Amino acid sequence: MSLSENLEKLSNAYGVTGREDEVRNLLIKLMKPYVDEVVVDKLENVIGIKKGKKSSPKVMLAAHMDEIGLMVKTITKEGFLQFVKMGGIDDRILLAQKVLVCTKKGALHGIIGSKPPHIQKEEERKKIVNYDELFIDIGAGSREDAEAKGVKIGDPVVFDVKYAKISDDVVIGKAFDDRVGCAIMLEILKILQQTDCTVYAVGTVQEEVGLRGATTSAFGIDPDVGIALDVTVAGDVPGVKEFESNMKMGKGPALTVADAGLITHPKILRLLLDVAEENKIAYQLETGLPGTTDAARISLTRQGVPSGTVSVATRYIHSPTGMLSLKDAENAAKLVAAAIQKIQKQF
Image (cartoon, rainbow, N blue to C red):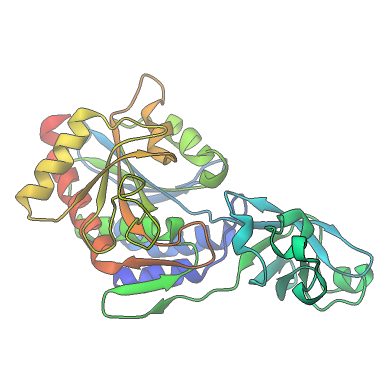
């Protein structure tokens, strides 16, 4: 399947942080044709292993499977669901969103509601409605009715959004952070017919709440090189200053120089730059982003791992719907695949 087809399947799957089961099962299925072995570790990271020469470097690719979302906290006596946020979500984007409550009996449609604006006081209408003042309405008439539908405390809640191609190169969809990284990782494995390096392609869990899966999987793998595949903020929209984000959708993969958790190892950065220039792949350099990626934890594993991040500039990340360029994702895969082929000579 093409990168776009894989991204569509991955984007439409449900996998709120800590509840990545559906995405994990899908990734295992999509990964199997391109690796020699697939294992699932104790924290339930997926690790696809493409074996190289015994004495060659071990390369860890990391793309997190989890997405931001919600979790049911309480069920009111009237049957409304109150929730907590899983991952970084701006309260401003929650109101009136369609959601799916993932129960053992199946997904239930719902909508995030609040006190109607028609009966709010003027000062109320001017305020951002905090998430703890919101609720999910699944059409239940009581707590007992909601429970009969299968709702339990702790059930994950995802945004009800489907993948769509809106031009030849531009797509929109749910959970591009970081299903696009997972799709890029699959594309890298597809490109790498043979490699001297042993490649560990890891779908990590719980990245959105502290890079947890990368921490444990990297310890187990003990790689020689780490590369995170993720998204970054596209600043090419009204209201964003270039100093805040100079990344642009459609201008090539973003190579992290430094972010809040990682200073890219100079050998890794030089490798990625050389490969991009040799293969005439457009790229962007990014520094100063307040967030970070799985590479931050990989780099601090055991005695340290030279690590870097290759990202796709994505509009509206950490919201229900993201937007990105397929060409950026495809070029990210080409860049990293070509870099892996050169790692043998440098590490």
